[in-house]
Length: 101
Image (tube, helix red, strand yellow):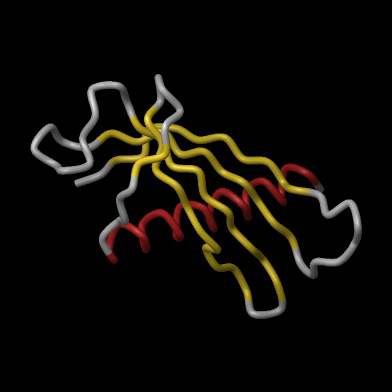
């Protein structure tokens, strides 16, 4: 089971004013068990893009990245892991908004 250990979050500004809603870039530092196919002894993080618009919050996309090499891994998360990531990102975006007010 994947565990989120820490994160960073940043609201992405649209310099051209083309996109509606808010966008957040999150880096989630994760740990996975050694027997998981995703495991890397170099450490892992997930770069996620969360969008908040008139439909609510939704995860736009994510990349799994090896920490020490910054190499993007060609893996997809399982459905329950994606839901975990999306829920976590939404929670952090809401907290971020509260801090910014």
